[in-house]
Length: 145
Image (cartoon, rainbow, N blue to C red; front, side, top):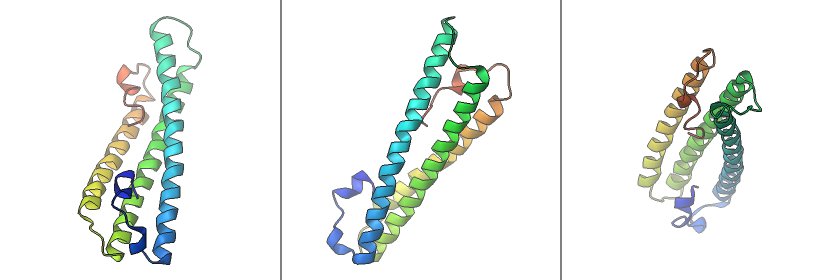
């Protein structure tokens, strides 16, 4: 369940197994949200290091470390968006089993799919730019997708 769905979600419409599935999904989303915080913290570190480099101060991370952290960050984001895409599919399944409306969940599924595609593209770009000696500022923008 996404936060938007909680307002209209009726737990009484689910049987015991489906209720257990819904709780598992919510717990997984809670953990996924915590990982997003880690992604944001890594992004802040990378961006601050870039600021130091541009201002001719001594950055605390090497270029190789920045490149590796950036790729790790992008991989984590891809895993997270894939997981959230999966939870959207599970939400649709639960809604259909309980006879609830799925129109907005299906729109959310499309948005989640687009997010997966964009995460793949951003990871590809990060991988390609990691081999270059000059990495433009765009390599560190959109740090959390």
